Image 1 (tube, rainbow, N blue to C red):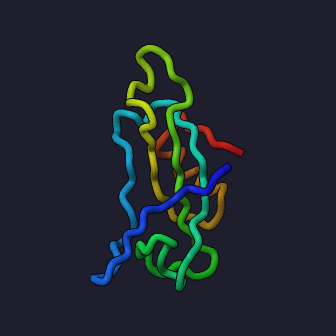
Image 2 (cartoon, one colour; image 1 turned 90 degrees about the vertical axis):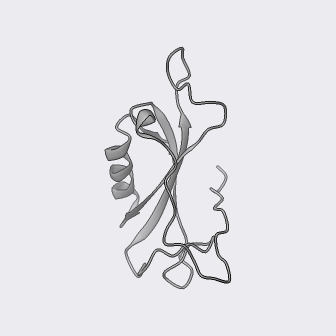
Length: 112
């Protein structure tokens, strides 16, 4: 499975604080299937795309979950071709990250 690519948000004026989630409350109950990936820290505070998360340190990670609708049927997941949901959670491990995603998307499923 390919790595989730982050947009480069670094600039000479500084880094943004974290990243915005993509998705709306309307889709939260849809059956979204997510890829979940732990972001790598750069200097313990930044992700690879330059966003500042603050005090990563040991045992804390940012996970990105990116997914599309798992079932396409009439009246379900009518959100357009290629539209993705993306959210970021701070967690100690993969299990905790999945739990945090499921709190927002109760019908979510995950690859592997």
